Amino acid sequence: MPPVNLHSDTQTRPSPGMRAAIAAAEVGDEQRHADPTTLLLEERVASLLGHEAAVFLPSGTMCNEIALRLHVRPGGDELILDRTAHPVTAEAGGPAQLAGAMVQALDGEGGIFTVAQLEHALRPAGDRYSPRSRVVSIEQTTNLGGGRVWPLGRIDEVLALARERGLRAHLDGARLMNAVVSSGVAASDYARGFDTAWIDFTKGLGAPVGAVLAASSELIEEAWRWKQMLGGALRQSGIVAAGCLYALEHNVERLAEDHENAQALARGLAQLPGVRIDPAAVDTNIVIFAVDDAPAIVSRLADRVELLAIDAHRVRAVTHLEVTSADIQTALEAIAELVG
Image 1 (cartoon, rainbow, N blue to C red):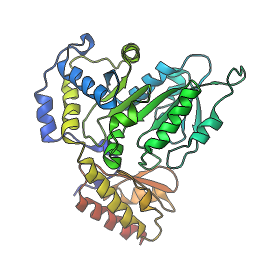
Image 2: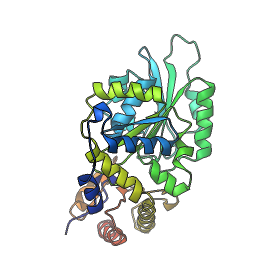
Image 3: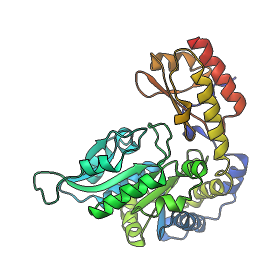
Image 4: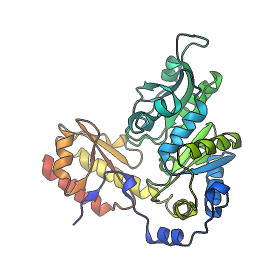
């Protein structure tokens, strides 16, 4: 029997319905703006996020890196974001290499920093000795912060300060739709105040490839130049864009099931000796719990449950559309046998 895969929601495979949509996709040359399926996806995401235009990209990492390059000017501009955010932890130093950005990482709670922390981090205007505060980025939901949902009020506070101080604002929406389903707040309400925002289709939404970056028409035109430069321009991209459209139509509301499974996992873990977790801190589909030796636990469970050790003491488990409530019970039983 294969192990329960809680390693990440990136592990999902296209369903039969999604495969059928991919097989039937109408396609053309994306670089000539002649792929109708890709154009439809871009239009839908721009509308969903409350922006003028959008561009289809192969990955969320490329969305982040192109967006940062749009905002950061050569010569000492600084990106401000949480210490656990994806551009810091999982993009191979991309902000420095591709955008030439200084990075100032804040210590938020669960990946969510306060407006006071942002204000303290801002550099004095006109100070030639300091980097220039240029762009603030938030991650919705937080990944290594534990799948927490940024409250809309907190986002509004951060955006108001950013505008007051002349900063650009970027929304890393890798799991934005998890936040939408969890909170009931519309995606456009979360995203429209940002200069750039994107959503990923390869996580809880279950598509095999693709993310879409939204912004003003002017910024998206410039993003296309960077897409070309970085090798992200495609040809008959409707093949994979069709999977993303299917995901928007069929896999958004069902994210609530992933959240319920994550809550069940968290409650079960809280009952086990040697496991430290607060189930109330689990907002969506990411569960992070503490043990004495995370790498050892993950290694010893690997043939029954696939997990991720994120440091010496913390383990991450992520629910998704291929994880059932029965799988959660199987995982809890396996962990209980090991720590009991």
